[in-house]
Image (tube, rainbow, N blue to C red):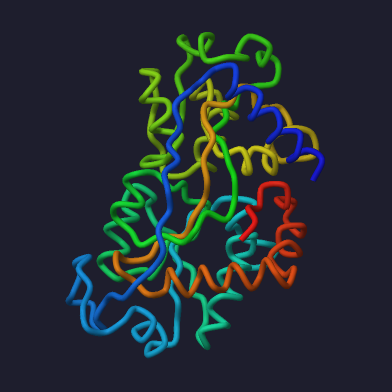
Amino acid sequence: MKKLLVLLLTMSMLLTLTACGSTKSDSGSGSSDSGSSGTDTGSDASSESDMAYVKDKGTLVVGITDFEPMDYKGDGDEWIGFDADMAKAFAESLGVKAEFVEIDWDNKIMELDGKTIDCVWNGMTLTDEVTSSMECSKAYCNNAQVVIVPSDVADKYQDTDSLSDLTFAVEAGSAGEAEIQALDLNCTAVKSQADALMEVAAGTSDAAVIDSLMAAAMVGEGTGYKDLTYTCGLNSEEYGVGFRKGSDLAAALNDFFAKSYSDGSMTECAEKYGVQAAVIEQ
């Protein structure tokens, strides 16, 4: 918790100094949506609700990427993490099972509208593109995009002005990619944030931009990337869960979040994965 709290406080101070742009936008709440067959792949609402569709098939299919501490595999083959555990609990509240499917993050909206997944629940930043294309839950976690570099050169890259000579690895379609593009810096798009970290560790990219929550869990002493560290923050943002446009599942999730926060189960889950400092009051 101490590591994450220090990181979030540091990001807040850096944002005040750098005045970088933010990708955060207001989140929405759900109404009614989709039909029951895969033939209706558009985002227009139909006569049957998403709630009925999910309950009828008995599964809530959750689109994710490998993203510790939100969605990742433990010792076995089971998906765990703050988002994964909350998704399982939400699915149980609906009387269905959560099924996790790894997706190409750049295609998340297409996957959702095509009904290969029912929601995107993977530390998703509430950008204008996301909120205009999906029915989103209320924000539930604070986050920031941070620069990752090898520890032995970290002192050279403590602000955005120092980044111009670096080549970045970024997840395609991510908030990190948007921030690097806004700064007009050189970047290579990869499949996931985990792949971006591997690029830096292998020396094939100079730096990466990933979520601060992932950085707190994945880099530095005691992690698999002990020779990497995070330096400057590029923005501040909030996470939300996305459903098909018009879906009534978003409103149901907002209610679930409110109850989970009130009864302490959301905080308990967050503490399990060390993200309690980022959780937003519901």
